[in-house]
Length: 502
Image (cartoon, rainbow, N blue to C red; front, side, top):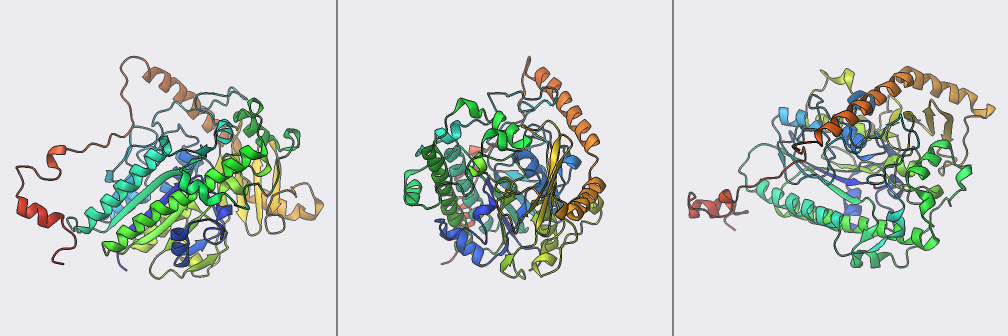
């Protein structure tokens, strides 16, 4: 298919551990399971960074945070960074976003020609961490364990209101595209905020998991002192000492999370039904920005290199792409080059400054040519953390923490750090060499600190006096909608009808 239409469905904080080969059998997700049956399913996909803005920035640009400067949830996504939306738009595509992408800065489009919603999170520098204040916890925007203790049922919430709107406007856009007013191929990105905490779900989805056998983590909580240093920093950042987390809290939080996967499944199913009803064909990509530890090891949310946080689902249904499970480690950084490959777009002019590669050869059985890289330099860190996944091993490195090396085939729970064992000295040496060739951690740290310091000054200044927000404002002219007197009624009714003549 030349210049295929492209539908990207992105969700937020959905762990790839629940997608071993499409949705786990026990999840109530019939529409995602149907999509999985016709998709290449990448079982070991990793985020560029286990946090919203840097993870999504990597997804959009195919560049790691150390290249983009999107280190955390308040770092600017610069307007000069090409995204897959730029590439597609330059090749003649209509590009549209419905939902969240956590763009920070005055550019709120980044190659999208049209946005249907505002973002759910702020676009300014207010959520900037400060490496100069290690251990600082900023209560008004840091995660806390209230998301766990407050889990339960709600028929409406801030996030439900948002995702209801995201889905509705995406469906309306698909209907509009079917009308044929724009002959260009299209790329529609639909980006939800669920199943991101708080773990609050509508009753009819909550009830699906009353007897669920997976309401307790596979790896129980450790004592605080038994965790690695970064995990302890995550606990502190999440204000764990202020909460007494019970087994019932854990079960309710996990139940709410699973319920919201089913909520998303219904929304996605409805979107795919509109695509089918309007007789439009499209490549379909399903992906998450990062995962959620969901109580494994006692950890929650993301911000970690452990599998629950860093691994995400990725499914691609496209003509010529064979459906089936692919175990080779891949990255969300690879989605952009894959879309370009499907659309026949040459990315060679910027290939030297990107970190992803097309997945079409991997889907056809080729061996990936490089390890998968992950970076994290946001809250709960005092220095950047980097990781490499290659083959069965994952290696984690930070200038202030002990190294970690896990054999994910033998130890999927990442309980045995092999970095100090003679038996794995050669493997560790190989990963050290790869990491040192890729990263100058001292330079990375200095760049993060400089960015934080600049942004803290700018944010403080811009909140004084007249304030002009960067948040995207979705504006529609009511005078150009439905029927108005500058329109011919007969022409309007015919143009807005699809299909015609049936």
